[in-house]
Length: 231
Image 1 (tube, rainbow, N blue to C red):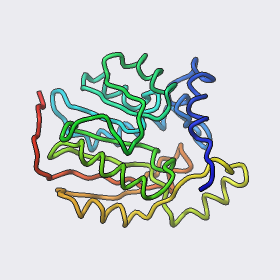
Image 2: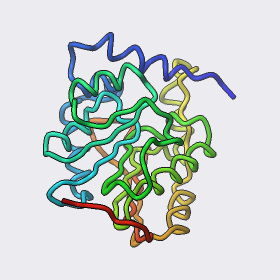
Image 3: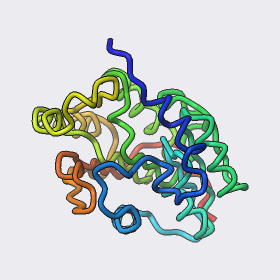
Image 4: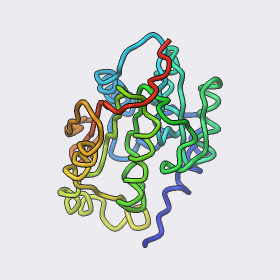
């Protein structure tokens, strides 16, 4: 297993870029021509999948400093988040003092079963060490999601484009490798669960070059369990 340096990067960014915008602190700067426009389009796309209610439980896995989760927080929803970077979570707490934010691994989420109305993770799967870890992560997000909840696993590196991306990133990516996935495997994983629907789409956000080589998985659940309150 190669040694990756990503965690070091995400511990450092909130310190080095503390005076900058949240999207830049989150690391979406290289290969991103317009961070503000990029963030807006991601949020617009997430809202198309959002199960609107008066107050919803929203969880982001790999929330970083909260550049996306803060949007839902400011709308008045109950927000929950995890990230493996201590410094990212500390910055996120400054932005969302009433949110439940934790330093945690994505495959061991500190939330109860059937708790979340909307679970999303954007640009995180690429940092997982293995496909095995990905499926541990999927099992966890399925566990914490309520019956009828929507799950969005987005910006996932497509294995069919791995060669193109490696050629583009070049030798400077050594130590900062990504993990790539077969979209059909993820679709089949969700289809094996109790779901109402699952779809896969490509990102295609012009401001972010890598989006053309990544896909989004969105699933609406139909599992049984205690639905919980949607006050």
